[in-house]
Every structure is written in structure tokens, then in C-alpha cells.
Image 1 (cartoon, helix red, strand yellow):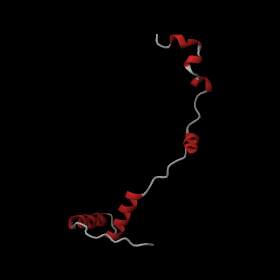
Image 2: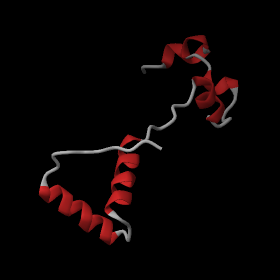
Image 3: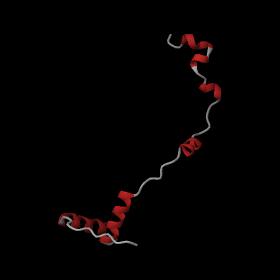
Image 4: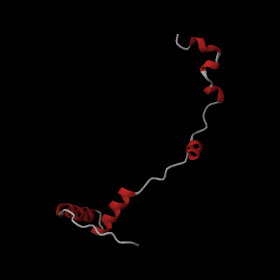
Length: 78
């Protein structure tokens, strides 16, 4: 696994990292890895097919009929 060296980090930031690591019961290095992982993790985008397949099957075709195709179309606006 590659190493990552960060130079020129502000002393206050390093202290905050140490305090946060202690609060989470881990080393500063482990805390740093966790922060980087959380910040850079990318959410896998779903394909259009996956999104469409996840949509619930509700209603009937008639529920989505175009208003213009309906005999009531003339009464749509009053």
C-alpha cells in the first residue's frame, strides 16, 4: 500500500487531528486515513436502467394518459 506524506501542515491542525483521534480511540495516522477515506470516497452512480428498475410499479397505464387524449380535455382549465 502506498504512503502519503503531507508537509507544511499548520500546528493547530495537527493538534486538532490528535484530539479528534484520541476522541475516537485511534492513532493520528488512523484518524488521518479515516478522514481522507471519508472525504474522497466516491458514491457509485447508478445507471439509468438501475434507476428505472428501482422505481415502484404503481398505477395503471390509464393513470398516465395524456390529457389531450381524454374526452375531458376541453374542461382542463375551467
